[in-house]
Length: 209
Ligand code: SF4
Image 1: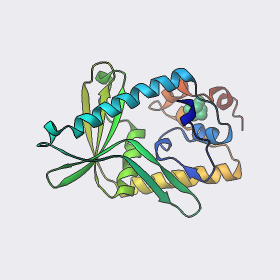
Image 2: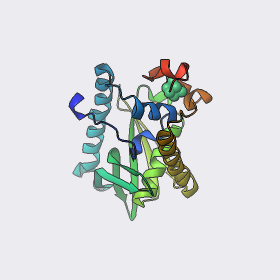
Image 3: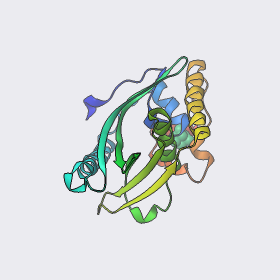
């Protein structure tokens, strides 16, 4: 798992990180930290679950309802002076009748607590729909403990997608100018939970560059 970690380079950004706190992402470029093995193991549970869900989509018994088209899509968006690229591991493209849809799979600890799509997941999906050109999106939540699922349809919103691209541009400028971004996750009740899992909490509390 450790071998899979890549060093980050300013000017190359990942679609999966744009929903995170912008200050945390900024720190991750300036002060890369080796991920904690226990955290990597938790991520791996999510990966195992994603692979299982993809197998379910691929299974020929489901062909009447849905056609599996692709997963692990390569992603690349060239912007003026930076690039957004990566492989979309948590995304499946399917066809239902004549309609193609992008399904973003997310694992959760307790699905009973999920009554609406997470804002950061919606951001990711908007970016994927914008880049891939398929404008039907679904976020599928899967409970890690019992495989129960909940799904939410997300409509493509061009303005929202362009705002997300502006976030990348802003991140790129702040990194190049060496300016610390605002402590974004702390600004809202909806996102403050991110700080409990943040490796940069101590630095952030001191507003340290
Ligand atoms: S502690 Fe919270 S606000 Fe600060 S960088 Fe981490 S996630 Fe962002």
